[in-house]
Structures are given as C-alpha cells and as structure tokens.
Amino acid sequence: MGAALNRWFTWRSTTPWGAWMPLYLVGAVLQLALSALGYEFLFGYLTLRPTPAFVLNTAFTATVSFLFMSFIVFRRARSSDKDGRSPGMPDGSATRPPGCGEARSS
Image (cartoon, rainbow, N blue to C red):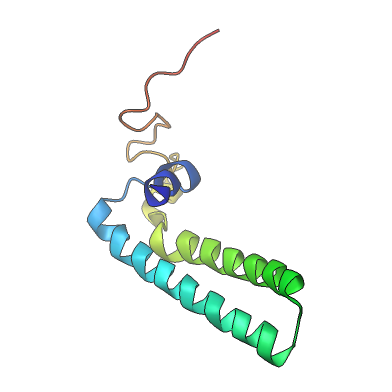
C-alpha cells in the first residue's frame, strides 16, 4: 500500500509497476539491513542509550531511503524535464490517477 501511494503522491511517477517494484523491494531490504547495522554501530560501538540511538538511526535510514527512492526507484525521465512538461503525467498534465475521483469544487 505504501509503495503505491508513494509512487503517485510523493514522486508523481507513472512508470509501469514491473519497472519499479523490484527496485522498491531491493530498497526495502537494504533499508532493513542498514537499520540493523546502524543499531549495531550505535549500541555496540558508540554505546548510546536506546532513545538517542533510535532517533539517530531513524533519521539516517529515512534520509537514505528517501534518496534511494528519489534517485533510483522513481527517477523521472530527463526528456520530460527538457520540454517543460509537468513530471506528473506523460502528456504533461497533472491529473489525478485512476480511481481517485474528481476534485470537488466549492
């Protein structure tokens, strides 16, 4: 569920599922491994208490995950950036994805 929501609402990606889902899964596994190694380093080597270690580890892994998703998984096509189109849809429009309904006017 998070993958589908991030795909559209965070990165406005219209890439086919088969192109990005394997990279997304690799990123999730790498984030888990990085988090485990981070805790080992913070608890074992730096001997931090649990709360500061949690805060530092969460900030670090969230940053790495966001960068991985931005530059690897949901990277935008460079050709659409050159012609001034919106990164939302292939035709340059910024419409809602299928199934999200119409915007309400007040």
